[in-house]
Structure formats: structure tokens, C-alpha cells
Image (tube, rainbow, N blue to C red; front, side, top):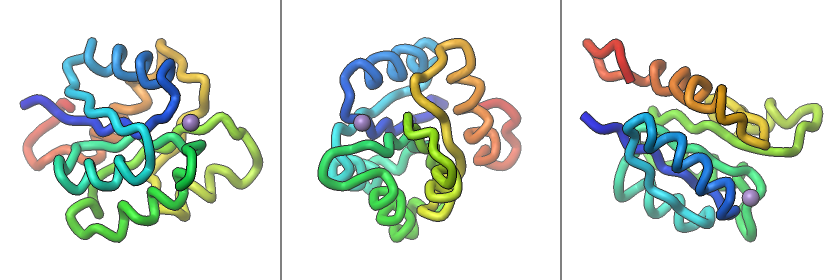
Length: 131
Ligand code: MN
């Protein structure tokens, strides 16, 4: 069964690279270019995992994560934050907001899929061993 990943990212280049890498591995990628679009799309498609850019216009990724976690249908969906702010306390802030993990930008094409699959594995349906 194809697994669906919601990618909330406002930067076209980052969106393109992450989509390319994920599709190459057989994932279905649904893009959202703003926080509000991401929240609405997540509620509609109930993705297997959400990749969330923290630096978004209007509503930042922390606010988006908090709102996603308000939806009972999305409580168990892994959220992986992506941010270029490598500041002390950032990781804690993303976890506090409801994210499961954190990937630093720029995305490294050699390690990106492995990082994402680590969070998908934690959310496998019973009886499955492969994402
Ligand atoms: Mn951004």
C-alpha cells in the first residue's frame, strides 16, 4: 500500500527536492504551501506522516504543529519538523509544539529518506515491518 506524506513547505526548491526524493522511493507526496493549507489538507487526507517546514509565512510551523495535534484524527501521525534555524532550544520547541522529530536544512539527499523512514517505522500498522 502506498504511504502518503504531506509536505508543508513554502519554498519551491525545497518542495521540489523533498518530493523528488520521496517519490523515487515510492511515496505519494501531497504538497501544501502554507500552514492553513497544510492543516486543512491533513484533516482531509489523513497522511501517514507530515513533514513540516518551521519557517512559513503568516502561521509558523510551531503554530501549525500545535493545531494539527488538536485534531484527534491526527494525534498519532508523526510530524517531522524541518528548519534551518540551528539555535539552541529549537529542537525542544518543535517537540513541545507536538513534533516527533527534527531535520536540519538544507536537506541532505543522502540521508533524508533514512531520517524520514525512522519516523514512519515508529508508526507502522500492526504486522508490518517495512514502511
Ligand atoms: Mn520556509
